[in-house]
Image 1 (cartoon, rainbow over the protein chains, first blue to last red):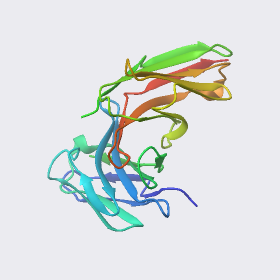
Image 2 (cartoon, helix red, strand yellow):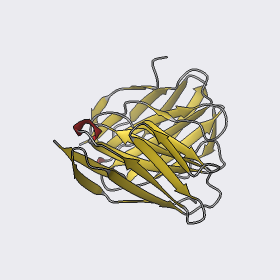
Image 3 (spheres, helix red, strand yellow):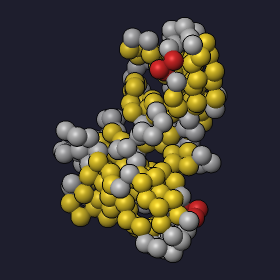
Image 4 (spheres, chains in turn orange, brown):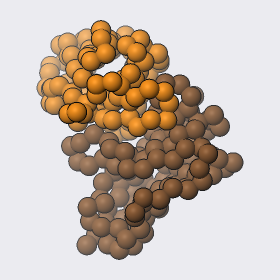
Length: 114
Length: 112
């Protein structure tokens, strides 16, 4: 398996524009997580899905952020409109059935909003 | 919710020395404690984990200890090498669908 695949790797956009980040989890994994990493706040969990259903979105900073998982092999994180403070590295991770199983991370998307 | 504190934030050692990173957690229901290593430009990668029914686990130069009573766990790296230089994160997982709460990370630098 190629691991968790994220696209794009880098995104530079202007303030106010819509940004969509994409993630393909490892085949067979049923939990998917979106994290945001910044120097100030470290790794923050934004939202996670189990069997394509959002379980906890309490980490989503505000209504400008939304996430979907239309099927077991694809998820998106959308920011609309984007702001400079959204600049960060966004990671997607997936894990297998149940708890206490390894979460595998993608390479991340570095987002810069200017 | 779960809160994980990690110390130190930076750690500098000479090659061959040992390195220890410590974490505490708040939720007594947490039962899985992984450690991740993150290299520049990459996503975090699991290096070792421990479950609540085990007090210590070792894998070559890396070991992790867990004290559930005190709610703390530690990462020990022996005979450090320059390639161990990276950011290390501890995490704690409760009972819900694999949700991990991460510590703030430790920047480890191993000097040749």
